[in-house]
Image 1 (cartoon, helix red, strand yellow):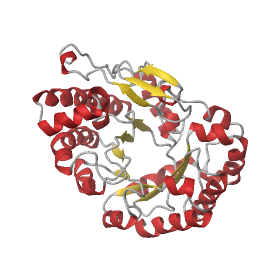
Image 2 (cartoon, helix red, strand yellow; image 1 turned 180 degrees about the vertical axis):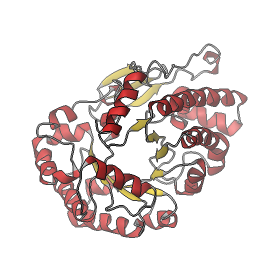
Image 3 (cartoon, one colour; image 1 turned 60 degrees about the vertical axis):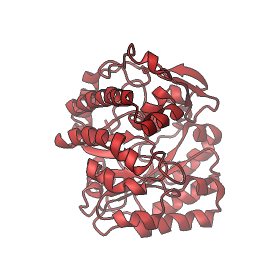
Length: 374
């Protein structure tokens, strides 16, 4: 159990100390519930959250009603067209939808294609006021908080297959289609502009999410990753690092084969999933890069409370380092039973402490909010 006060200045210090291996007072942990989970459990889930309120310092009674509402179009039932002209579909409110129609499925459309302008809209087409974002960052800093910038989930590798379709992109890479270079350049240029916009607001950390793996392997070979995707990460993350911004990298699936590459790209915090990546494999990197370990969501849904408790203790024991560099993330899907949610909260309450980082499912909205504490 953590000791020390949980005011905003202290929460911020602990978070940065964990990233920089500066002996944080406790291991920061984050327990996240998807909108569908809040919708399913409502007040029953609130009872658990209030019982362990020190792990949920931003939660107020009754918040479950707004947290159950989909924060942006990806989590709403039906279809919508994003700013890149990709068509998304969702049949389960509160979980993320998928791209079902790709605007550049045919290369014939590429010459006339115009990507969105990140200074005007976000990936979902919502208007963005960057001056207001800058003012939000100022307010967060005035109150002793950390300001997080973010790229919408799937901003580089995933955006490529959103645009081309997954099978088409795999063929493009396998055949080394010369047009692929121009497509990558277009998406990279968008992301570099977005990185500059975030730097200009004065944020401290930028969250970047790109799912690279499946349950068993990378979606593309490590060599293809190094050829097509790693150079993009090096440019985006390198620019952020040059301006004193920490880089947080999330990826679903197995990524342990490219952990060294991500570190070389400048990642400060990597968010690997346990299950596809084993704790014993990740232990090789403790003390070298901060890991915000994504605990086994499948076990949360299917396991017994004792198994859940043992899993959490095993992961933390394998990956904690005397100087820091460890955070813990527990995401609870609607299939996670309440008794396991209570076990997660009780176990983490004994071993870890709260975090200044908030839930990015809720914060990646089209309204232009800056994650942080105002």
